[in-house]
Image (cartoon, rainbow, N blue to C red; front, side, top):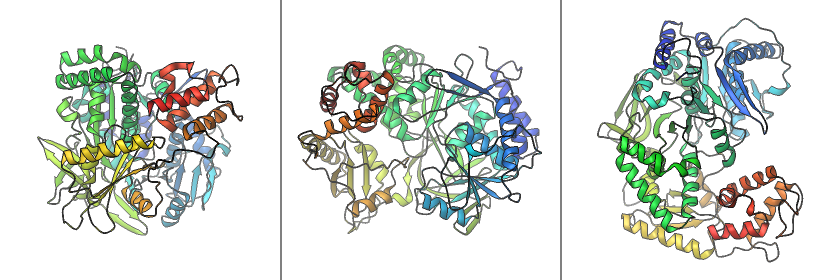
Length: 636
């Protein structure tokens, strides 16, 4: 196979070792790293598409653009060297250009989380004396430059590289931590790529000579910056832009660009799994049982020649509805993932592995084995070279390594890493030579009984059909915890009661009835739009502030005799067509003048609202408010 430019080396392996040897010989600095990252000039760095065209940008083009942007920024930024400059930009090539341009000019980039509130960010900027932010239009209390308003000049200025950058902790705790990394830590992170490549050959697998990564994870997050960007940019592979996060666009982008690697948080994998299972279940109980039986056989066969052949034949139709056969390596990270989700993706023929790390310590391990007994049980593998793991008496993971954040700022406090063991406060188990994540120490609930209750382990086992999210929270009076169960808000009362009954039966079956005092069905989202994972403290505060609506039999809107589902579909029709629509049986195309592009917008919005894919079900045959509403009701 001919790979896209590998510096005239005979093989991909040879190219990997060649690049790493250059790294080992280089001065440890962001300047050296910058030149090494962009040394394969002809390779395609970035791809994106519009409705009609596809575009490819090379490493040379990007390198030149970074130098031009640096020259342009120098004309408007008047700060002393090593000043902190915030980046508040969307997840695209402009983020990458801005990051390097800031470093190039001698400023320290602060990677701002777009999911944080303005109040949180403004307080943070004040605490660490960040006096400038480059943004996508958002204004802050400090000087803010909108990137699109910068007048670009095709000039080049002399480099004056800074040697520090900052990540923010995920925000799942009440206090945001600012974690500093120098070029030394980033160099050590890249060196581990050798162990990763040797550990699993799938991670370096190309499709038609190209390895492409979906720009799904935010680059301001340690997982996105390291696993998605740094590891693969160093070897000059290709990144594919996502125009938006609608389910249809994600799948279209993956398949249109032949993406080979997808790294994402569990929420992403969960949504695809739930959508696929709903689609398969919608074909009837006989089809569902046949699929589940095939999945069990596939996972039992594992990574054998027979297993690979079985998956290729038995699940081709399922894969054709997802990522086809060009996706080779997938990683989930950021929080615990449901073992059923791992079994689904690995069982149908996609390699999905579980990873571990945090903002403070970087990406420290992920399961490199192809053995299904490890993959499907959510193993996080063993520590990568340069890290050591140790579990203390309370089950918390302690990590020591040469890539841990050099210091951490919390408000005005600064803690410098001393080279010893860092307490992650994550609960980790060690079994059969592998490590397994079981949640966080501060998530433990200790009621009056004195028993340590781990919500993560309980929630995973109780996520049955019909349940969207679960969150076990502390009882106000320290009695047994309360289980909040999120279901589809459009479920009728009968089906909601059925789900409640099934959950309670499952609790008794698993012996959790002494650990859960109450089950509450809610029709609001437990996972906010700005969350990657359940924020238990936030959910608990909202529950005790009566901010959640407990499910009731009332399922009528104020819109005459139109039920909630029909009313919502009517609203989405009006949105897609940009005009008021009232006729329930009017045809989207023939009567209302909608185009196929308008329809795709409608389909995406319906999937987002109801979790139902009407396009794959009936293509364009569902084209009136009544027809779509009736179809949705039949699937809930």
